[in-house]
Image (cartoon, rainbow over all chains, first blue to last red):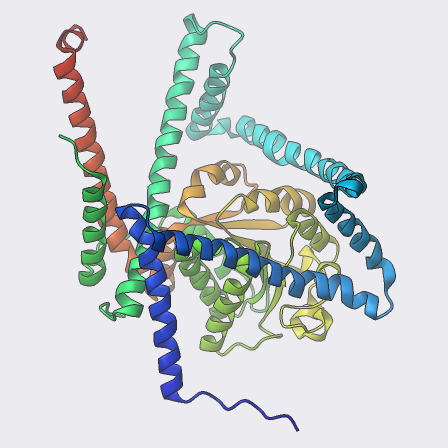
Amino acid sequence: MADTPKPASDGERITMTFIETTTTALLTLAIYSFLAGDNPFYKFVEHLLVGLTIGYTLVITIKSVIWPEAVLPITQGQFQTVVPLVLGGLILLRLVRRWAGWSRISLALVVGGGAGVAIPAMLKARVLDQMTATMAGVTSPAGWIILAGVLSTLTYFVFTRAHRGVWGTSARLGRYFMMVFFGATFAYTVMSRVALLIGRLEFLLGDWLGLLRS
Amino acid sequence: MNLSRRWIFALVAIATVTTLIFRPGLPLSVSRETRHVYEMIESLDSGAVVMLSFDHEASSLPEMRPLGAAIVDHCFRRKVRIVGLALFSEGTAAGYELISQRANAAGKSYGTDWIYLGFRPQYTSAILGMGENIGDVFSQDYEGHPLVSTTLGSRIHNYHDIAFVISLAAGSMPTYWVEYAQARYQVKIVAALTAVMVTSYLPYLESNQLSGIIAGLRGAAEYEQLLGVPGAGSRGMDAQSAVHALIAVLILAGNVQAWRTRRSRHPMESESR
């Protein structure tokens, strides 16, 4: 009978948590040290992050996709996954200059199939449904504002006609609508970035230093 | 006057740290959008199934985790079952850890109350494939069990068995859910977003292509308020408000200073205006 691993004692768990938290805290501080200027600590953690991300993605892809969905079925006698595996393998031939042309077969399938699936879906969701909603929304004051915003912004992007007179006024209105959009987007971006800072400082002050009330 | 960027960093750090430590408890109102998502889950029957897709990277966890935690807690409280998955590799472990942690706290069991499908690359084919048969896309769950061997896994065949999909996203993934799941299979999509993505998705909400939006740390704090359980979202909101006020003051001061500098350089131009 194989030896079962002994469960960790309370002391071991506390030590592990301390090492884990302190390592994370030091890595966070190394990243924030960039605010004072570029330095070797920042560079080290930046490279560590890139390496870890690639390694993690590779492991997850092998564990969740390649092994259970492609290799395992073959070992169980289901050979239909051989075709996508071979096509995937052909893409890797790009790395060998002499056989690189073979990768075009797989790429052609990906591009052709991808475009065929994506173009009608994008056209429907991003253009037709949006246009329908814009036209159907004019039953309310907000709907009229949206319609005015869409039309005036579109006139701004017509460059084959001089922006003068009524056309110019509409284009200027479109520019104001876009400025409101940029302002709102900037404010939301600030909100997002501040949230990231709060997340890290909460970790440093709370989990690491224990200064925050729970 | 030329203020060094480092002073701004220091001011932001001071504002954040002091409000995190002292927590003044600033008031927070609940937005219409967050309340709508809350009511969507509230209106589900016990035993209904919600699909939770972790479409984000580790870098957005400070926003995504409080949002995800509030939604998962609400689902478990309402006895709504959760099918988790990830279309971004980095979201895979984060999603699994989040749901299993909340499930343990709520006394929910794996296989019956929730399952985790794991990660699939090529989100287009994954989203489309699940519309036909979820088992074809995920023959096994994240833990390696055949999908049909779990009670919940054997109940879900395609989007018809799912009340709605919630995409916890830090990028453009809700667009693909709308394009390939909502438009094609008429499944309802809710986007739980980082704040930076909100303006990109409001048009989809106005056109009813998205059934709901809940966004950022503020969205999480609002949701926690509706649940009556303050969590990470609520803890961060005081600091968020303080830093926003500081940044607004700095922007105003910067504009006044820029206007004064321009006026002193070109007094005639300013007067003619």
